[in-house]
Length: 210
Ligand code: CO
Picture 1 (tube, rainbow, N blue to C red):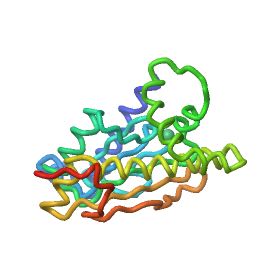
Picture 2: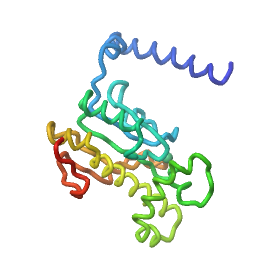
Picture 3: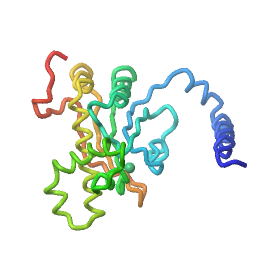
C-alpha cells in the first residue's frame, strides 16, 4: 500500500464509524455549519485544533499559518476573520500558539530562510518590541517560550486593531478574544491572555464611523 493510500483507507473507516455512532452525523453537518469558535493556530502538525480540544467537525472554524500570526495585511487571515465574525457570528476567537514553535525559534536566529524571511519578519518585530524582557531570560528554550506567549498576546491585540473586530464589538458585543499556548510536552493549553468584547485599546488604533 502506498503511503497516501493509508489516509484514504482510514477516511473510509472513520466515515463508517461516525455514521454507526450517529446516523444523521453527515446529513446534519452537510446542511449548515454553526461554529462558536474561530481558531487561529500554527500549521505545526502536532497542534490540530479539533483533537486537542476534543471537539467535532462543525464546532471550530480554523485558520492556520506558520507561528499563528495575525498580520493586518494578510488577505487570507482577514477573509477568514471577516467570514467567521460577520457571517458565522462566532462568539470567541482563539489565537493558539505552542511552546517550542519552530517558526518562533527560526525568527530568533539570523539564518536566511528565503521567502519565509518575509513571514518571520513579523515575529522579529514582536521580539524587538519585547527585547528587554526576552533578553533578560538566560535559557534559550525559555526565551523562545516567552516569545511564543508574547507573540500570541500581540496577535490578540492585532485582532482588536482590525475594523472587523471593532465593528463586531460595537454592534454585537462579541466576539471575545483569547490568547492560548499549547504544550507539546504535556498536551495542555495555557490561557495567557484575554480580551473581552469592548476592551479599550490604544486609541490611535480605534476607528470612528464603524
Ligand atoms: Co509552530
